Image 1: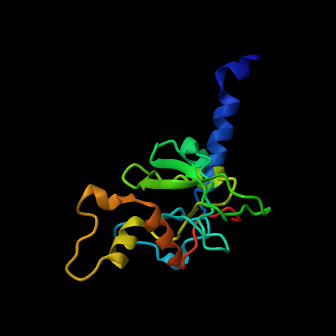
Image 2 (image 1 turned 120 degrees about the horizontal axis):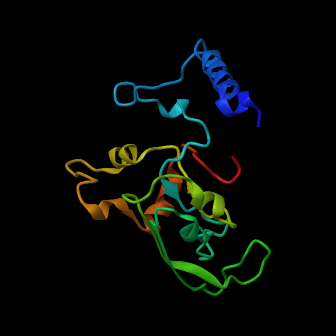
Length: 175
C-alpha cells in the first residue's frame, strides 16, 4: 500500500463525490402515516399478506415440503404434513404423497420478507398487494373489531385460501 492509500484520502474523495452526485436528484420518500401510498402506486413485487393458491382441480398446491418454513427467518410458518387424499395429482400426473393438514402463518411474527415465496418449489404460496390493516378493514363485519386479539393474527389454511379472492397481486414467483 502506498502512503496515500494508507491515509484513505482517495477513498474519502470518491465517497464524497458519490454523495454530491446524489444531492440534486429527486427524492422518493413518502411520509407514511400522513401520506400513505395507494394500492395502485405499489408495484407487482409488493409484499403484502399471504395466500395459498389452488391447482386447477381445486386442491391446495402445497406439497408440505417445509421449505417455506425452513426459509422463514421469523419462524412464523407452521406446517403439519399428512398423506394426500386419493386422487390428488402432481403437475406431472403422479399421485401426490403429502399435503398440509395444518398450515398457519403467525402474522404478528411475520416480517413480510418474501423468502417463503422464493423458497417454494411448487409456487404454492404468494403474497397479495394489500397490507394487514387493509385486510382487517375489508374483512370485518359491522360491529366487529378484527385485530383486537392475538388469534386474529394467526392465519390458518382456510383463511389463506380465502385470500385468493384479493385482486391486488403482490410478490409471486413470476415477478
